[in-house]
Length: 383
Image (cartoon, rainbow, N blue to C red; front, side, top):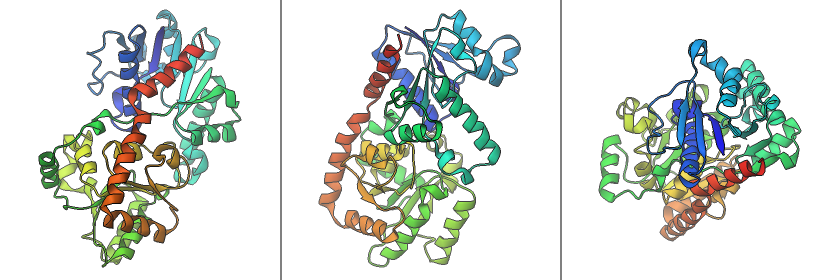
């Protein structure tokens, strides 16, 4: 097969959508090496090293489209797809080129989440309108729709009326760096580098209302002085971040909540921005707390399970899909419930060990190879 991808995120995004794109493409190229893979990229960067794969080819816009690459990506890329005799085009981030349904090329789109539909007030009206047009168009015209969780599948059906049989759930993996076992010496080095405490809870994610950091801080306050374990926060935010910081300041938690992404040691550090140091930070944490009220998949849950770090997460949305029987589930709206979970994990080594063991087993369901296999089945079903 000759398979093409929307590779914008693979080359220009170093977090979620970029990691998904790079991991999937690399796994497909390695496991299904008999196929040819074409990366349709508005711009090629060093973010994705395709040198190890002789079956991956990067295509960038030519002629006038060099200066209007976004127009090429959204509309005129189909001309190049036809010249390359592409069999299948995969939009890896919620959209496909306009008019591709009028060609002989089969198309697939991955829909990661419809958070903007469920929580429209968290986005600008113009952004909502753009997302809705792109996402709904992709779901309508793609030959197959990949949802990254059952939760996302149900949202696609609810909001866009897409036929259930057109949607296939293919779970995603996470950055392979989280599979590595970090030595004690390296963990100590990273702790020293970022001035981390010996014991801490960890939060990873954007600091926005939906992800619920404020309730973790309230639970932290509730635990004191019986349990005094600080919280390390990886993530940034705006208005909601100020709400969280105000609570921290007003309740004497300034020394107990460490906003790591704002520290001098991290702002310009390449290994922090690329997440290279994250496995050591995860593996040094007593637990990762992720009480989000809604997600498309919940990548930090998987990162923590690969890291052998116990996970406290919500009993809502897709979190139980990702966490399986390995996570400690809480009501994200109940501060007392979060505090109870933190207490249990902080005071019971046996519970932590068992959660780490179960987490590693659960993580095996989301290996890059298994994710690639599920996607390849979608491709094969179209030909």
